Length: 427
Image 1 (cartoon, rainbow, N blue to C red):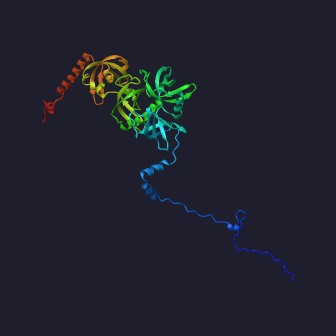
Image 2 (tube, rainbow, N blue to C red):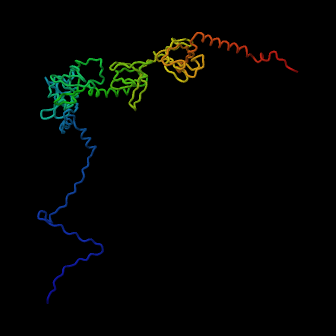
Image 3 (spheres, rainbow, N blue to C red):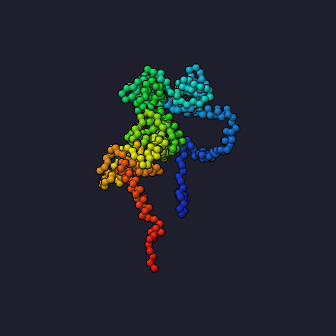
């Protein structure tokens, strides 16, 4: 009996049953029977309370050792660092800046009374295989190589003002010379001051084959930022403060007050046509406005006790006749200046005995005239003057007119009984 060949069994899928995935190929390196599932590693959780408790249990020495064992931060030339002076030897001082190594600094850079344990603030001059070299400044005997290091690090350099030339000053750094523009010698440069021989701190702005350009002003500006903030915190209206005139403009003068610049408007420079003070001169002024939001401080150099109105009632009294100068002519009258800062108005009606259409028919600006003080309003600082009543004849006429009016008034009007006197009543 002949057997039929066996047919492969067909799998019948029902419904939406997915097809079975094809088996992954088995390689020689990873047999199918030996494959393992990756192990699941649970997320580590830190117990903060336990960690803090462990830190509290550490002794001071253990904690210092732990901190010192941490990798130290890389310092770069010109970076500002703070540390503690740990020891002083001949020619060198050592500062602990918080790393495994100590910084070396010239003892001349330290204060004269510096001692071990003091805090030191310095700049990184060099950092590398040769160690950490610190400096607070570069002395005036520095060579050009040291000046180049100071330029790269941004360190201040001590120099001496040797002489002045066109546009600036020659600064001496040992055997090296540098140039400082006039505007960079200081925050306020007075033309009346001789700066020759002064020893100042400079910062190198440019250093190349052509020469060295330095500035002391950038250092002074940095120091002034701190002091200026202190001025803003303490100043208030009415305070009397002292400063130095930094600049003079047509609209007023700028006064420097510990790094803060304030404006004295032209009208507040003094009574009358007061001249502006010289740049570099010390002045005393009164604060009349403080605007911290806008960063503006306004001052006045007028002394209220010595103002011209303080003389009214003493040197200038009502009824007195004085010499004055016509300051301004307007349609309604003319302003006459009796003394700088003290003006009075001569109305049109007091310009002349004759009828006039405009005050310029009688006076012009700059004319010298005699005026009589008719009235004084001290509260509003106003004074009414008269030109036509300044002569003796006009004054007598006014006085007689006032007397006549007062007399005639008393004779013409009396009591109600006086008006009815002599009148007969009809029955």
